[in-house]
Length: 328
Image (cartoon, rainbow, N blue to C red; front, side):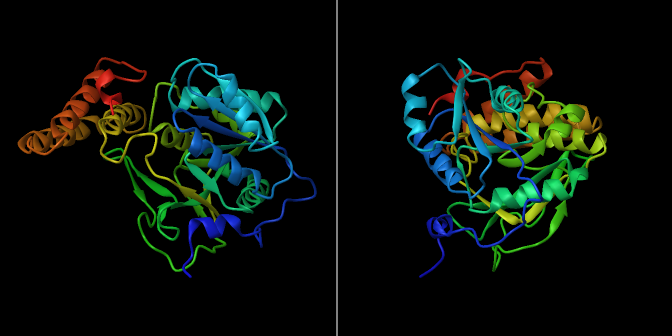
């Protein structure tokens, strides 16, 4: 019988790094917008991760719903609480209150985890061990695999190219024979899907930049960490599975196109000042390509999303963006 994500998540922890003489207090911060079912699955996997000194804070990017907190407490006793933001604040502004609350509760480390991701048993302990042994990293993260294809790599590190404000991703999309590993891979950023950092990092680098609503905030954080003297590491012995783009509506959704376009231009203006003209030229070609194929369903809306992302970047707009990108 072939290996599946479900069989891996059921397996007991059978190795990985050992935490040093004391077990650091970790608080997992999980941001949720839409799917309560995905959140429950994420919490259930985290509850069985095998790490003892763990609390969980859920940040709900929306109004208060008492029934939500009550139902989540039935999934895990590790839940410290649910923060309701009142409205959709985006990834950075949604996670930041959870980070502040976690440190206020005495956490030594924060573990950010997407609600559409699932942690494999033993992975958190492996990440904490790496962070304790390599404080110079600042941020550590796991290798992330597609949930639908347990040996296909989604993220395992990246190198920044300042010429065009882009990244070259290590082994992205590749199928590997075994997920076992012992390498620590230097990387220019750690995916916000799953990352671990400590109090010292936060004091030196600060919170995520809330001008990024979706996408590129983790890349910005990584380069800020490097400028502060850190060198982020991917810990290949730690594994997370990711149901890709559930909250963004799909790889080519107008929502994803708009926010990636706007955010990359903002990112480039901060970290690669010569890149925005090249990016604008590339986006213009994408718009033209879509308009020439206007008969394909949704291509006009996708072209409109590119144009809106460019316009709103030039106007200095932040926030969730125009209403049309959020329509199903």
